[in-house]
Length: 206
Image (cartoon, helix red, strand yellow):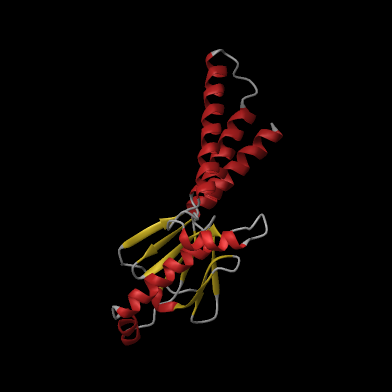
């Protein structure tokens, strides 16, 4: 990637990851644990042949759970935001933020006109037509009951951005070298996924 290195040094405010992602991810991990136990029972009983598929399946399920559901997250700090997706990590300092939107997911636009979105915080889907009572309920129910959605997280990022600017962060950034967005590949996630695919291919060929 051509981005310059930029490191956030501010305090961590919050980490966002949707409840469905956590439920699905840990359910898949539990399934992998069950498969591991069954494989261990087969080994203990002497049925060692034909275990390539079970072992590959355990690794593949665990890898998919971690890479697709448990690893992706958004980390909000006092001086910027980190978007951790499946195999990429994008660090966006507030000095480089032009706009925060939530059309398709949590989206951060930088001063160069580029848009970076988060796999971990999608937009809320409306499965039924909204009514007037829904609009009224949204103004009266307790804060946070709507779950982690792109709109809610975008609002919190926007508030943190405004707080950073009011505290003089923007003036400090202008005085020094402008901060840039840092985007890099997460080699650990890529390696885990590659290992899972490789084991599945070896099991199929064997």
